[in-house]
Amino acid sequence: MQHLQDQLIDFFKKQNYKGEPLLIALSGGPDSTALFHLLLRIKPQFVINFHVVHVDHGWREESEREAAMIRNLCKKERIEVHIKRLIKQDGGDLEAKARKERLSFYKELLEKIPYRAVLLAHQADDLAETVLKRLFEGAALYHLGGMKDVSEIDGIPIWRPFLAIPKKNILNYLKNNKIPYFIDPTNFDSRFLRSKMRKELLPKLSASFGKEIASPLARISAYSLELEEFLEKVMGNEGDEFQCFSGTDFEWKWRIKKFLFKQQIVLSSSTLKTVIYHLKNKSQKVKILTEKGPLWCEKGKLRF
Image (cartoon, rainbow, N blue to C red; front, side, top):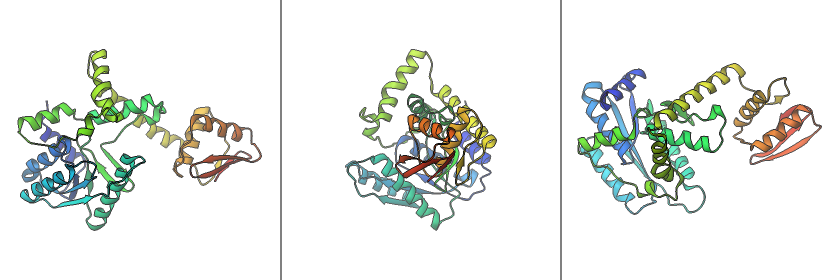
């Protein structure tokens, strides 16, 4: 088995990394802690130039103390660190709000320093959870793909060097090297869907199947991403107005979804069927209500 250190070096070589500044998101949990220490380990031989970013969500009493420990760790290792404490919010989708705040902070830092990429420590088990969740939600075949090892989010270049590495390998590395890390109790709270999947569903499925299922789910993700890439190439993108065309139901759904995605509009399956019906029948003027405002089906055209 290839060592984590070698896998990390291979990842950087694949990206043609030449020592440009990188920004690693360090929460203090096992995955990001392992990535941080591995970067320190390969730094002398591979010329790694990186800073640390930590966002304290303020959800737990320990979070302020953990942020201080991360600051001290970076000071000890002579690594520049950027820490932001968020104002605690109540109600709504807290995880979505926190993610938005994190991305905003990353963007703010990228405007000051030309980081080549932001490093996130998602690993193979995280990818499996994402694919399984989308599968149970009934996502389209071309939307089953989870995270990519190299991607872009809101203009922010993202690298995930651990994405093909199982969680157990990371935990073994930390244990063998006696590296401490923080434990977030919410990761084991079954009230949260991700926690329930991690703690209950995935282990039960693996036990019932008789083998671990993270790797097969990762393959499904890869196949789905390949399919999406192929469809993008074959079908292309719509302009500012969607016009009626001759094609299969699959083509209709794909092209309408892509057209609406540019406006950040997602329709339910039933509403999508309604839109397709009115477009195909070239209805005179039908208004479809969406979260972003009305959508009009008029004489075979779709417009806002």
